[in-house]
Each structure stands twice: as structure tokens, then as C-alpha cells.
Image (tube, rainbow, N blue to C red):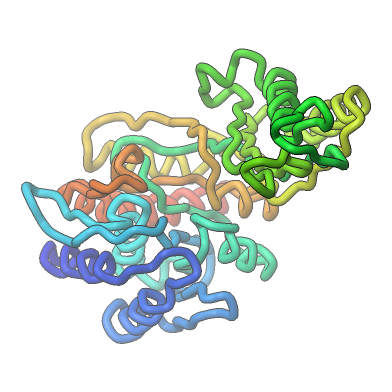
Length: 373
């Protein structure tokens, strides 16, 4: 059994490594060394995009434990105070990552195969998980480590579209005579309002896991303080519930952009910069059952099954490989990305035992089902 002190120091050391997206190598190297030297993995390596992959055991079930090493930018001094560890990534998502790894180190090799993946760029363009998926992993189940709270299991994430809008009104004018040319920023504003109404209606005001929401996240336009802008570019972030697809949303975007462009004579275009389909796990799956049993063992409560409004690596792998996947981990999601990011030490320690028991239950139920068939 992993000791309390070892677990705390392991997480603390991981938090002390500053790993914003695409700068994860210090942590990857450290994890690789620990997997081979201390944690009993038979193989560990860093792949071509920077993921650290470690394996142990043999046979079925083949279980993928996947977490990300990167964090959003901005360092937070690592400290232990009042029963919490503070630091960038404490919640999102180094505590889930390390607790999964420590649980995997306790898994008996004869009960199946563990593939532990510490991936890169989850907070960016999901380079790590996309590369992993391209290798067509041979796994039966996947658990992703993200903060859900110790007594909650994330079974669904929304999908995401990032759309780049471009408006060109073809000419400009002196700002003292604005009637001589259209204003691309004003035209972009009109296009945005049309899109928001078409895609979201009033839903974007209330949010929720069942609604489409959209946000304008970047805007760029104008060439001088006294010239009306000829060109404007904007990025919109659209989140898509599980009963909708990216193609459904793109059809609406195409229709609105075409309609507005024709009505005002401006050149309006768009391109898709990122797309991730929504994903929902089967709540009767082996994974949900195994995790639920483990949470009840440790927390003495029945876990809540939650649907999040964000988007995660689970979407990419679950949709691509058509396999059972869930997301679980210690930490308060509302602490993530904040200047006060932290994890309750006891929750982190308890999660190690929950993951450990979940792996045991997955193996037990998997073999039981095989024997019945």
C-alpha cells in the first residue's frame, strides 16, 4: 500500500514542475523514471508528441488510465496549508493523474493489463489524446482523470466547435465620414447576434448540459484609430449537448453566414478550427458500476452521475474507439484554473484507494461476464 507521506510528496513534487501546455517534458521524464524505478511498471516511454506511456501486467481486461500533465499558464506557489495542497494543476488535473498512477502501481499483474497514459496539451488542442487515438489502442475500458469531486462520476461531456469568422467590407473610410463605408466590426457584431439567436436562442443565458451555448472569445479588427475597419476576425466557442452533432451546428452556421453576407453585401466567411463531438457513457457499464462500488466502499454514499458543460479527452477517445469510458477524479472543478487552485489532501488520498478498488472491481466483473458467456 502506498504510504500517506509518499503520496503527498509525489503530488507536491509534480506540482512544483511548471507544465503549461506543450512544456510538459520535466514531468514526463520524472514520471517515466518513477514508473520503472519505484512503481513496478514493466515498460515506460515518452512518445513522439511527449506523452508518457507506461504498462504493467498481461491479459484482459486491458484498462487505460489517462490523465493530462499540462496546466493552464500561470504559476502558483506550492504549499501545504490547512489540509490542502495549493499549486497550479492541484485540481486540474495533477491530483487525479498521480492518484491514478499510484493506484495502478498496486494492481496485481496477473489480474489484467494497465496502460497508464500521461498526455500532453489537453488544455490546448488535445494533441496528446489525438495521437494516442491514432495508434488504435487495444483496450477494453478507459478512465480519464479530471476533477469531478470524490463522490461524483462524470458520464458525459458536451462537444465543442471553435469557429473563426471573417468579415471584409471591401473598403474603408476616414472615421470622420463613416457613412462612406461599412464598418466590419459593426457587421461582425450583427453576424454574431444572428448566430447566437439561431444557435442558442435564450438557452445561452441559462446554460446547462442539455443546451447549446456559444461565446465570442476573440475579436480583431481595424488598422488605425481614425480609419473605419475594413476587416474583422472573431472566434466563437460553441458547446454542443449529447443529442446534437457538430454537423447539425455547422449547417446552421453556414446558413446564417450565407444569409447575412447576402443581405449586406459584405464578404463573410468562416472556418472550423476545432471540432469535438459530444460523448455520453452508458451509465449501466462495467466502468460506472465498478467506480460506484468503489466510491460506496470508501465514501459510504452512492455517487452522483453528472453531465458536464465542458469538453474533455474522453470525448475524443470514446467516440473514436467506440468503447466504454468515464471520467473521475478528486478535486473541485470550480477551483480549476483559478489563482487559488488547491486539492484537499484527504480527498486525494481517498481517491487513490477508490481508483485501486475500481481496478479490482473492473477486473472481477470483466472476468465474471466472460465466464457467463
